[in-house]
Length: 316
Length: 316
Ligand SMILES: CC(C)[C@H](C(=O)O)[C@@H](O)C(=O)O
Ligand SMILES: CC(C)[C@H](C(=O)O)[C@@H](O)C(=O)O
Image (spheres, rainbow over the protein chains, first blue to last red):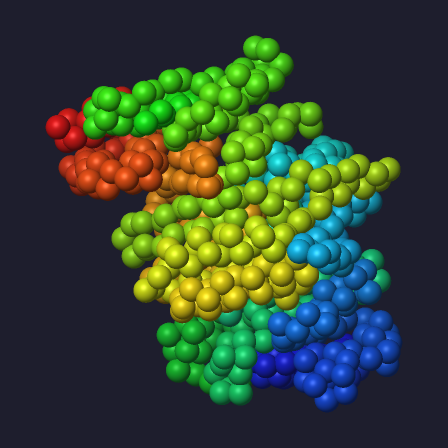
C-alpha cells in the first residue's frame, strides 16, 4: 500500500503527522511518502503543485491530506478543488457523528458551481453551474448504496434551479432502482432541519457547494470542525482529509485539534480494507476524549502532540 | 398608503389574515386590497400570477405577502423569485433575533444563481450564476448603512468562485467608503460560526442563494422558521413576508405560527415610517409569547387565530 502524505499549509502541518503516526503504528509495512503541495510551495516556486507532485499523488493508493491555504489572490486556483477533479474523486463523504447525530453527508465533488467555467465581462462576472446526468447518477448510486437499510435524503434547490431538477430526477431514479427509502428537501429547509432534528437523518446526498455549506453547518451539532473527517473517493483514487481548513489564525501554536485528521486516517484504513484498524483508531480517539484529554477548541489544554501521544498510547 | 395583501398558498392563507388584522388595527385609514397569486391560482387558471395582479402589486406602496407553493413541476417558475425581480426588490433583509442572537442577514435578492439563465443540453443542465458590479455595490451599500456603528460581515465563496471575487471586491470597497468596520468569511465557515457564536455577528451581507441557506440555518438559533420575518426592499417597491414557506404538511389545520407574519407586518410599519406601530406589534408578540401563549411548533397549544387574538388584544 502506497500512502502519499500531504500536510499542506497551516495546521495541516501539525495534524497530519499525528494521523500519519497512527497509520504507521498500525501498518509499519506500508510505503509512506511526503508530497509538498499548497500555498507554501506557491510562495516558494510560483505553483501550488507541480507535475511531479501530481504524478506522485496519482501513483499512490491513498492520500492522507491536511489542508491548503487559498489566498484571496484571483490568480490562485484552489489545489484541493483541482485535485478532486484531476483524481476523479467524485464522492465527498462527510460523516457527522456525536451525541444526537449520526449522519453522513455525501457531497458531489467534481461539478456544480465548482465547474471552473467562469468568465468576467465588463461590470459582471459569471460562474457556470454544470450538473451532468452521469455525475448525478454516479453520486446518487454511491449514496444509495451507503443508505441501504436506512434512509436517503436528497437535498436540492430544484424549486429554483433547473440544474437541480436534473440532479433531483437522477437521484430519485437511482434511489428507486437501489430499493432505498428516500425523501427530498430543499437545501435551505434541509440545513435547518438537520440542525433541529439530526436524528431524522442517516444519509444526505447533495450537490457540491450545498454539501460544502451543509457539512459546516452540521459540524455545529458536534462542537465544530475540529472533529470532522472526510473521504474523497473516486474509481481509481482516494484522498482523506479533515473537513477543517488550514486555520492560519491558530497555525504554528501547536494547539490544533488532530481528531479530524485521525478520523480521516481511520476512513483511509477502512477504505484499505482494514476495518479493525479503523475501529481501533476511532476507539482510541473516543477513549482519549472520554478521559478528558482535549485540545483547547473543546475546552481542554492538551497540545496537538500531547493529544496524539495519548491516542498512540491507546493504539498499543 | 396602499397595501396589497397576498396570502398565497398553504399556511400563507392562515397567517396573513392575522398580520393584516394587526395592520388594520393600527392603520384603519390605509387602503388594503387582496391580490391572488400562487399555486392555487395556477391550478385554477394555468398561471400563478396574471398581468392584472402584477399591476396591482406595482401599484401598491407595500405588499404583505404570505407564502407560495412551488410544485416540482419543471414548467413552473417560482412567483416570489419572479416578483423580487419584477419589482426590483434587491435587498432581502432577514433579522434573526432571540436569546443570544441579534443579527441581520442582508441577502442580495435579484441575481447570482437566481439569474434564470439556464439551459438543458443532452446529458447535462446548466444554471448561470451572474454577479454584477451594480448589483453588488447596491446591496453592499444597503448593508453598510445598516451596519453603521456595528460590524459588517461579508460572506462569499471567493476562494472558489470568480463571481464571488467580484462581489467581495465591491462589498469591501463599499464598506470602506461608508466607513464601516468589516470582516470577511467564506460562506461555509460563516454558517458554522454564526451557529456557534451568534453574538459575534451584527450584519451579514451575502449573495442570493447563500443568504437563502444561511438564514434558514440561523433560524435554528431562535427555534425555527416560525419566528422569522423578512423585508424585500427595492428603490420603488417593498414586500414583506415570513421566511417560512407555505408548509403544505400543516396547512389547513389552523395551527401555523403567525409570529413571522406579524413581525413582517412590523417591518412594513417601520418601512412606512411608523416606528411606534412597529414597536407596538413587536412588543405585543413578545408579551404574548412571554405569557406562554404559543403555537404547537413552540410547544404550546394555541391555534393561529387564538395567538392572533392574544396579540390584537395587546395592541389595544
Ligand atoms: C477550501 C475549499 C476550496 C473547500 C471547498 O469549498 O470544497 C473546503 O471548504 C472544503 O469543504 O473542503
Ligand atoms: C421559495 C423559494 C423560491 C425562496 C427562495 O429560494 O428565495 C425561499 O426559500 C425564501 O427563502 O424566500
